[in-house]
Amino acid sequence: MFNFGIKADHFVASLLYLRRNRLIAELTKLLNFAHKFPIVSDDTKYHLAHCNLFAGRRAIALELLADFDIEDCPPRVTHLWLDVMLDTHQFEKVSRLFDATIAKGKNDPEIEFRQAIALYSQGDHESCQKILDSIDADFGLKPTIDRLQSRLHFYNDRYEQAAKIAISYLNDPQSDLNYFYQYYYILICTGHIDKAMELLRRRPRPTHPKSLQGKPSAFEIGPLKGKTIYIASEQGIGDRVEFARYYAKATQLGIKLKTRHPAKMIRLFNSMTSSAEQIPKKIKADEIDSFLGMACLPALVDVKTNVDMQSLPYLKAETYYADRWRARLPKDKPLIGITWKGSDLGWLDYNRSIPLKAFLPLLQRDDINVVCLQIDQARDEINEIPSEHRPIVFDDLDAGKDAYVDTVGLISNLDLVVSSDTSMAHVAGAMGAPSTVLLGKHPDYRWLIDDRSDFLYQNQNTIRQTTFGDWDTPISELNEFINATLNL
Image 1 (cartoon, rainbow, N blue to C red):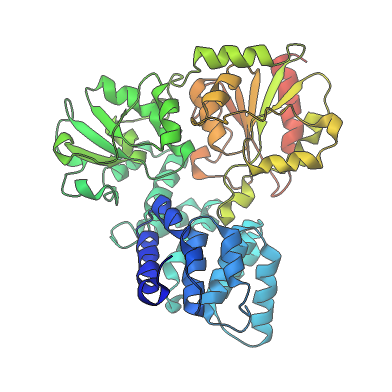
Image 2 (tube, helix red, strand yellow):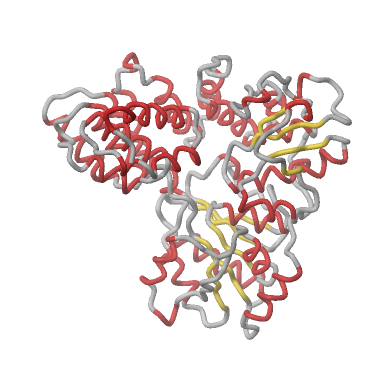
């Protein structure tokens, strides 16, 4: 048991340090000790709630905020509560607090901005724009307002205005790295591949690993043949799989890549036709010539066209798992695997995840077998589906220590994989498996702005929403695609 009087301040200071440096795994471990401290101050509750939200532990954050009167408490607590509401897609609660604040004659730009996010998340761009126009930009919110404004411009076909905002932050070392990649994807979407690669070569240094901060960027060391470069993986699983397409080309150029993946992902990446070497937790600086952010790999291998961004399949199933699942799957009808939800952290997820009940027209078909590829708590949605129309579920799918190994073996036996914009879309694509990605009205930039088939992966196509929130039309198109593709 910790002595609260002596060590509580140190404990909170450690949490704040880990949060500030985005060390989520370490932060989560330390948060597990929080119950050892009696919480005696609102300040401690606030900091614990903030750190728990940052670590994705939203239920705990809400529990810590439950004792506050959200309409009459310090503004920072109200703002944090609103962030939890946005993260959990409780947009009506955000709007009610916004209305209550206006009714009291209060002026809080932070609340107004969060209302703008709620409106954007629900596809109401016109009302979102009105809110943004009314916020006092001198209040210190300009960078965050500009990020949302740039997205509004982009998804309303005002690409030059979207790019102009992103460009204005590129030379500011204190600006959010999201601006950098936002501009990169705007260039990709609008066909300016050469400018996009030039931008990647100017990319700010990754924030980790600190032991390599004295090393030059890969774009600063001249000829790369024979060099060893550490790849800093700064994004999610889907991003890691997507950018791994460039490992083979780097190897062909005589470049040796090293990186570090989460323990559960190592086996998956080792099954790729060409992979970066997995290194121990402690990086020896004398074994590395330079380092690079993962998303800059296209520039490292000198991508010049959209075709260069494609690749042959580079992820394959292990024979044991492919055979194991072949023996367990029904053989009487075509097999369609589905996954409908990725990580729900953040308000942007509202536009990419699909309610399972929207798939009913697919699940009700009697000429196919639908297999569940979802392995997380989103499976609870299956209980909302009539029992006779539920997908086939395997409770032991990827239940072992290695993520996706089972799933890849299962996918190798399917006739089609259907996915929302999740890591599963990238795993199926990297395998070259026949796959379809269902995209919301305003998808991530990486899916471009049109229906170009096979842009990221061979054998993969996209079906896009034309009306925000309407999944019935894309599912109808999906059924037609299945009929045509599988000759049903």
